[in-house]
Amino acid sequence: MKQISTFGSSSYQISDLQLLRNSDDDAAVARLLAHCPIMLLEADEAVTESNRARLYILLRGALSVASDTRTGMADGTVSKLLPGESVGEQSVLDEEANLSSITALEQSEVLVVEADLVWQLIDESNVLARNLLRLLSFRIRAANAQLRRRQKLGEFYRQLSMIDGLTGLYNRAWLNDLLPTMIATAHGSNAPLSLIMIDLDHFKKFNDSHGHVAGDEALRAAAHVLSGALRPTDFAVRYGGEEMMVLLPDTSDKVAVSVAERLCERMRSAQVFGDMRLPLPHITASFGVAALQAQQNEQELIATADAALYRAKEQGRNRVAV
Ligand SMILES: Nc1nc2c(ncn2[C@@H]2O[C@H](COP(=O)(O)OP(=O)(O)OP(=O)(O)O)[C@@H](O)[C@H]2O)c(=O)[nH]1
Image (cartoon, rainbow, N blue to C red; front, side):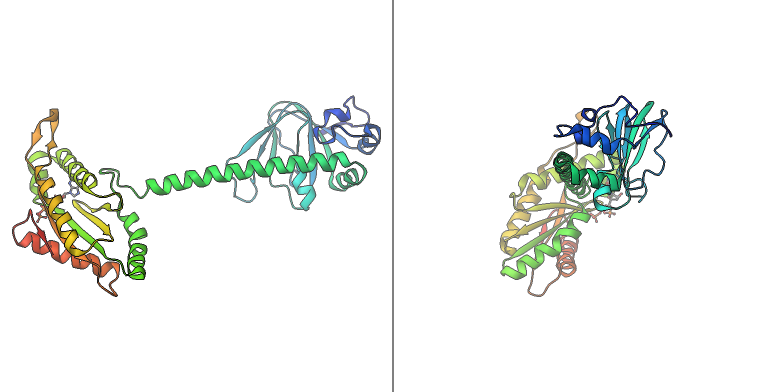
């Protein structure tokens, strides 16, 4: 980056500088800028000392401005600066280091205005203060919009990470996140909460006989039975392997048993399709039902449902136990 002239000895006009456009007295502003250096940057050359609190106004060419490269907080945002536009205003105003890294995209000419001169210009010319306010408010709006987009994207990925890829049911991470809250809500409002633990029967044999791919298909069919038979306020979770769980807020154990009976019946008649869409033998599942008791926490509730499931297996599978 080398100095090729000053603003006063160049042919550039105040009207070429966006921040100073529409000034009442261009001549006075030009006088103040007269000694400011104009630097030449070759393509790919970076602005040296760009962290200093200075205003850089692009006169010719194009610059790339990458955000926060020095703090390790770079978020990959790179903007392109075109002639007339500037960078560094914020660091001049808050007297903090400029955290953007500035590189020429092609041969470019840049006017460098030191911070104290920018303050002098603000004192002398209302137009700079007005244009600066407008520019900063535009940037704040753009930054807010970007933040909102990122928050939405973050929420999308958070939700995605809570869904089981094979079955589309909620996964264990979701359960760990939500069950304690659901239990606290139920305790707090004295409302019932029931949980059904579900395990496919002889699933190892199913896999061994028909293959793992058909086994996956069976898991999907089982998940479809659950999600298709529940109210919108109920939740179906893949607890792990071939174990699933249904959470029924505001539901007593009596009603939960009838829901489990319905699910058991539907599971029995669900179709599982294998290769060439040929139907495979039906699957069955065992169901353990538990209702939240006073003072019970999530581990205790799950353990109670697990014990009931164990009884359903013991009693011959393909059934509901409490
Ligand atoms: N295809 C497939 N199989 C799975 C998946 N997760 C777990 N399994 C299988 O599920 C089977 C569970 O077997 P076991 O725990 O022995 O139980 P089971 O054969 O169902 O017997 P019971 O529960 O006593 O009726 C194992 O063979 C696992 O490999 C999966 O994502 N896909």
